[in-house]
Length: 203
Image 1 (cartoon, rainbow, N blue to C red):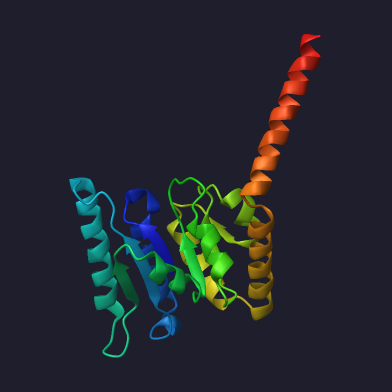
Image 2: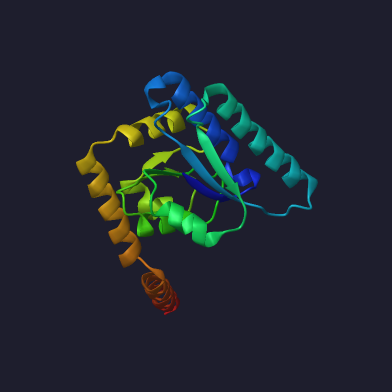
């Protein structure tokens, strides 16, 4: 599963290409695994975003046509701004892919593990700000590494139950403990230490 605004920095097409490679290389997943994407329209009046949205849609259609059957198609996507629906989806994922090329904190990487109740595995780009905090218990990938992302999807889907449970529990614990209050405390602590250090060097 993924939840993203439809913009190039979110690396949506490469994520679908990795899923395509997964189905090609590991046919045992065909008919059993479905990629659900909640895609939020953004800057829809700009041509570059219109083209990117079209490319994403064409990629989805190509993969569905390549592997789909009457009973199953690989990718379901929702192109709308429906936060409640996306949160409901995050409660149920087995694997959450966050593979942005460049990003800030990326709240999806934190919201997903917080609400998920299936011991879902987080695949997280090293370029995402949240990776510093969550990377230890996620499967980390380089955003441009298609092969690495494909293998991360395979690892996530075949991960033993006990490892999934442990990683999910640690992700939740980290997110709950290192919240905005904790961040503000450390920010103020660093500021005080900096002032004290400058005071010492000036005397």
